[in-house]
Length: 320
View 1 (cartoon, rainbow, N blue to C red):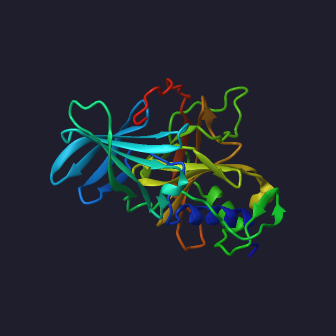
View 2 (view 1 turned 60 degrees about the horizontal axis):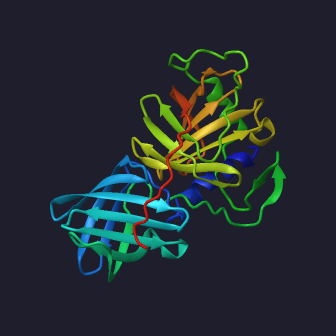
View 3 (view 1 turned 120 degrees about the vertical axis):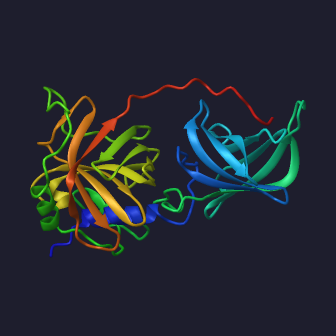
């Protein structure tokens, strides 16, 4: 069987993305679960439920009491901040730069704003915020490791073992795919078949009868943009383009994929596929972690690029 190094690279990307480490800067998203522990004081279970102008809102629960929370990252100060209120009063945890990362946790400092007070008080207590989602243990931190061997089709190949998918297997999946469902108009004049995946984009990804995710592309590894996939559950998502030289089959293709620790879902997009108005339809495929063969789901998939949204400047400074 011909080893397909494109698939080795993709699998090793996913394996690294599921590593037991958190990324800095923080990757935040609706549906994430965190635990927050303030030393010798309180512990909260936090679930992010909605976007705010600065970051995300959530509900924090402690001893059967639920309070409001907000979490946001300040790029200029390179800090992650969480506010919890009313206690009465407001707790604020501040995590500064990558030095705050400790495995699956951020370790920082606790401040408190008493009712009617004008400034926050440093409580001299540590605050530990731990990522707590069973489907994805840790934010994606791709680190394939090993020196790259000579490139195949322009893509570097990590010098570490993986479970490759053969060109024959990929061809079989494409040829056996069920007709794609949906009502997207087909190929208007001038609309490219190949989606362009770039940092800062948000994509809605749907696999028929399997799930729907929103993926914000926030970082790159090996020039592949990736980010959290939040929706049916929490996964890593990525988008990439591959030439026929890289895949070993008789066509170029694009792939949008979402991965958990159990399986990878691939939406395979082909030049002859249905597309229009920033929406592409493709062939759904699944691979169980640790198994070699890729299998068609028998259903279609669809990806849609959300319009870019410009947010106002953040002028609020929590702690001076």
